[in-house]
Length: 182
Image 1 (cartoon, rainbow, N blue to C red):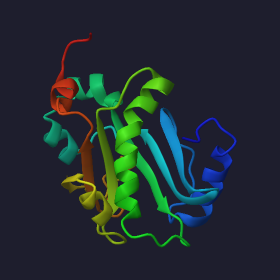
Image 2 (tube, rainbow, N blue to C red; image 1 turned 60 degrees about the horizontal axis):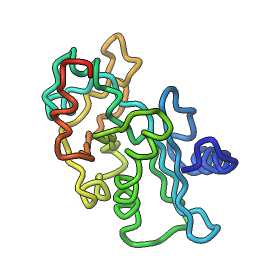
Image 3 (cartoon, one colour; image 1 turned 135 degrees about the horizontal axis):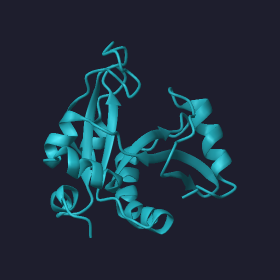
Image 4 (cartoon, rainbow, N blue to C red; image 1 turned 30 degrees about the horizontal axis):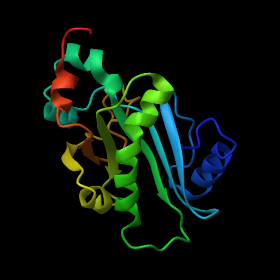
């Protein structure tokens, strides 16, 4: 994890230069990782707060509006995933997703005082097939409508994306649908 370290600058530079969406500071809760082989960077992975309302994910969880409002902080969103262009290692992407799944709940809890129990991501269907997510056992739960988070006029100007989720705990649904505060 590089958030809050001098290597966070490296993450920012690599994502800005090599990710098709560039770098954008993640607002709210977030973690940033750089995978290395020795001192050579291989990949950058960014995580942030979950999307507020996404039909496929919400139906998969079985969320009511109240449960979503109460428990959304328990979902982490994979905001950036970049294998650097000079890296050619078969299966590296799915391997890194597996490694992230092992550490992110603990890291999130250390930084924010609560875990995440479900991960989500959105894959641009025009650019990618989601192969690494499927290989890492993520579940495709539908597709977006192409609206994006700032589309208040229902213009549908964003690319349609596949939505994938990855439960970090077997009891994720129970934890995410709890109605009462603890």
